[in-house]
Amino acid sequence: MDIGKSIGLEYGAATRDAFGEALEKLGHENQNIVVVDGDVSDSTRTQAFRETFPERFFNVGIAESNLVGVASGLAASGKQALASSFAVFLLCNAYDQIRMSIAYPHLDVKLVGSHSGISLGEDGASQMAIEDLALAASLPNFTVLVPADEQAAAWATRAMFEHEGPVYLRTGRPDAPKVYSSDTRFEIGKAVRVRDGDDVTIIACGLMVAAALEAAQHLSNKGIEARVLDMHAVKPLDQIAVIKAANETGAIVTAEEHTITGGLGAAVAQVVVKEHPVPVGFVAIMDTYAESGDPNDLFKKYGLSPEHIIHEVESVIDKKA
Amino acid sequence: MPQTTDLNRHSIGELQRISHKLSQQIIEITTKAGSGHPSSSLSMIDILTGLYFSGVMNYDPKRPDWPERDRFILSKGHGAPGLYVTLAEAGYFDPALLSTLRETDSPIEGHPNMRVLPGVEASTGSLGQGLSIGLGHALAARVDGRHYRVYVLIGDGESDEGQIWEATMAAAKYQVDNLTLILDYNKFQQTGPVEEVMPALTPPGDKWRAFGWYTHEIDGHDMNKVVSSLEMMKSVVNQPQIIIANTKKGKGLSPFEANDTNRLHGKALSEDQAKTAIAELDAMYAKLEGA
Ligand SMILES: Cc1ncc(C[n+]2csc(CCOP(=O)(O)OP(=O)(O)O)c2C)c(N)n1
Image (cartoon, rainbow over all chains, first blue to last red; front, top):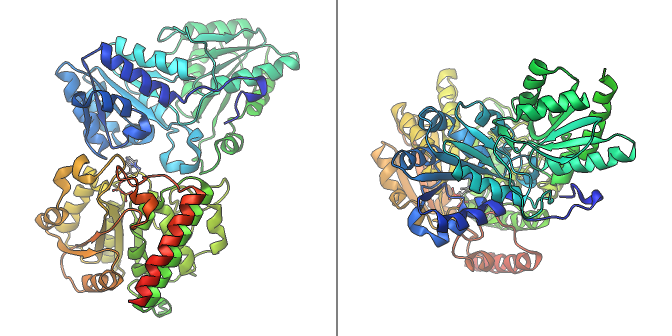
């Protein structure tokens, strides 16, 4: 991908790679972790854990409902269970099992969905999770994490095991532009301010944080200073940071690799409308399925490029009181 | 009533030549795209050739929505390249489109999308769903008093999905004899051999027999067997049928066979590997012609 390249962002590993590496590391420290796979460990990167800890790794085959149920049983018997597949199959195929066997009984299961969003590219819409954040966030008791780069993914992998309760962690396929340096540490539910600015706030998650930084840099050349928040936890949402953004910058644009319905933008808008109404713009996939293609082309075609963010920012600034 | 079956009625020798051509196209278009599932497509290409070009299936590429057409549903949607080369050969669209596999704005998508490409009967790519859809089509024929048949192709790894067995039970309950399931029994799934990932699925015939299906096992690369078994299924009454087709993922070509952990699942060949594979294909089919 070329997001962030125009402002000189370096590229690191994909978030799925960083997750896989961190999981294997944690496996040494925490003997209580068990991993369940649905025949995709090479894609999700739980393969490293599988190779190092074969006795704590179970491949139940291409059977996502069963995958989730088994993870639930392992958790109910005291294990810290992680179940992983492509985000779309995990969330969409096994939604009732996630609801009944994990969310409702509030069990300590970690769900990791890879290949999220349209940045997965050439495989096309059937493999692209663009509804997963809405689905996961609509489940009571769930925490939803969307790391922006390799550092954030490594941190989130550790943080979700330190957090007690169900977590959905979303990872992506392509190498990700680096947003953070190596000593990154943050807190679930606390947005990270990755850029300062007083004219507008861009609230983003995942790959769109780098896109927001790129947009902010170009806006700065036009005399608009944008604050950029990495909302790495879509749930619980950092309401204080949102209210502050509304209050201090007077306009907000959200950016996510997800449909416009029920994801980050919807969550932010809910807070803004209730607590401090200001103009809000949305950069997201507009209620449509995408297609196969090069991720950069798809980002342009489906409205996720930095240019789209710039356009949205200019339009909310026009509406500022 | 116009029937195009005769146009597509080819001899075994001609079918082998078609399969050769389609196999080559599968390798070419996935290598050009730089991604896709050539090995998964190659294992089923003799079956698709038999289905579409022996006269078994009744269809009209000029009228993809013709209500009396026989339906083919590719449940293992990642075999899309194999489906596309077959549909192009059958006349559903211009074969020139094939080289746009996986490109933005092309209807030749990474996985089949029934809304953008004529001849695609179901949008697939999430495994385990095609048999239920096929059963729906088969029951619709009963409700409407039509005589078409429905063919569904699934993978052996795909049979891990519980939904396959839900549909298997329901099809037996309703005794749909216009439904033929074909199992592409290539013995590999994504992370390894089916025998290791899900041993209880083997041998598959016993499972479907236990659910009340008519079962028949063949060599899925023997064109004579492919065609005769498909014909035979038409005479089964009051029972859904399954053809268990023993196949090879990568169809005996060395770049795939060299990787015996998963036969390069989901990976396109490099240009060099593709050259090797196509030369081997040529030799394989030259031998068939000689025989
Ligand atoms: C519901 C679902 N889970 C996982 C996948 C990822 N996936 C794509 S192909 C594949 C393996 C399929 O194996 P099999 O059915 O044996 O097909 P073949 O070996 O012929 O490719 C997997 C796990 C998917 N497409 N759908």
